[in-house]
Amino acid sequence: MTVNAALRLMAGCVVLISLALGAYISPNWFYLTGFVGLNLLQSAFTGWCPAVLAFQKLGLKQEVCNLEGMTVNQFVHIIAGITILASVIAVIGFEANALYLIITAVVGVSLLQSSLTGWCPAMTIGRLLGFKDSVKAG
Image (cartoon, rainbow, N blue to C red; front, side, top):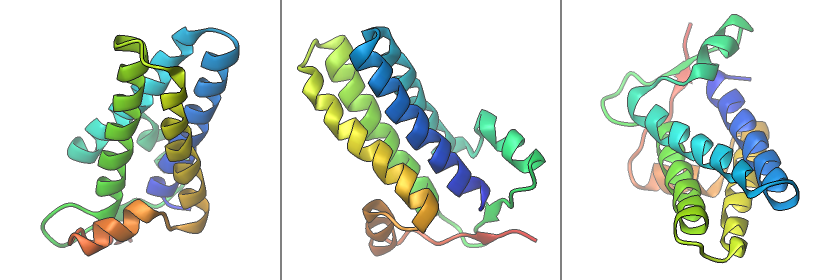
């Protein structure tokens, strides 16, 4: 498993768990969901995420892209981050119906399954838009 796959796995799990906690325990858990979305979005542009260091210490391989431009993984982070943030902000900030968080749950499931299969619809769209695949470093 690569660092990017582990990040998607962790993000998908935290999104799904925080949604469940928000629905059954306290809506304040939706802030954690929003944090995951924000972290996915910022990591797409900065390449930094707190979990990356832990995953590297566990021996997971980092992926790199020798070509200029953004990678498919960065595109997935952007799409997932924006989608999660938009639905959480709609529910928390604008008191929209909590059913909008189903969109976030779908993103969480997609992140989870893409970490295991290496494919999700956003990856295909990213490739079609010209985002580059990354390869394992070293």
